[in-house]
Amino acid sequence: MPKIDLYTISGTKSGQIELPKEIFAAKINSPLMAQAVRVYLSNQRLGLAKAQTRSDVNRTKAKWFRQKGTGHARHGARSAPIFVGGGKAHGPNGEQNYNLKMSKAMKKKALFSALSAKLKEGEILVVKDLAKVEPKTAKMAKMLENFKFKKQILLVLPQKLENVFRAARNIAQINLAQADLLNTYEVLNGGQVLLMAESIEKLEEVFLGKKTKKHETK
Image (cartoon, rainbow, N blue to C red; front, side):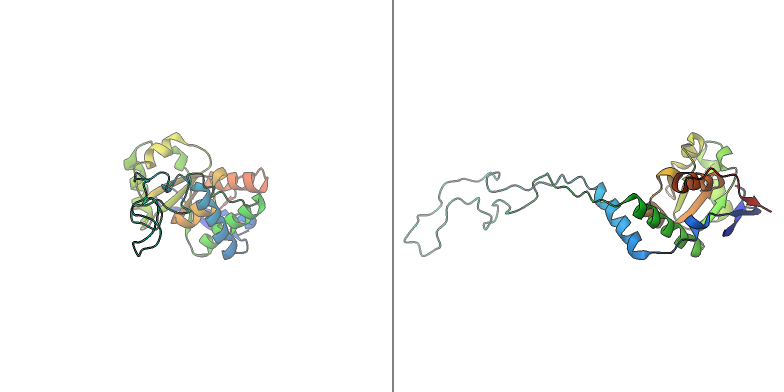
């Protein structure tokens, strides 16, 4: 199993922790990750856009010049799509469905690929005792100073922790996610991944079906 340094919230090393190889040493599959991101973003679209057709625009429906003898093409109402201010031809009707599907197995492989890529790039950091942090923004900001983070951070929680949420919610640099709901887009777009030690156990439990004990080593 790959190992990574384990830190306290003060920024000091506290031994190492083993990472499950299935999750953090998986084959990096860029096309699969791209597909997972595309599916996720497409499923966020509501499809509410609606254009006015020629029957919706507020223009007269009267024939605006006679049929023959003008030297121009024959035209009826000025609400036709070819005229400025006319209706839109073949526009969105407000009932668009942008939902895409991806199998659970593919989603899982894409997530493992993203986490493995982050580990390979040195973009994963594991911290313990974060669950004990006071629910104050200043305390979380102090922790960020201890680690000298220079980019966005994806803080992965093992479950909903109200004190951590309250401490981090007003810091624009931090994105919060739960281990059991983690997806490829969040990992790739969230910046540096900050894992709580308990989150690793939760990832194993949810995605590998394993009940695990702590992997801390000295």
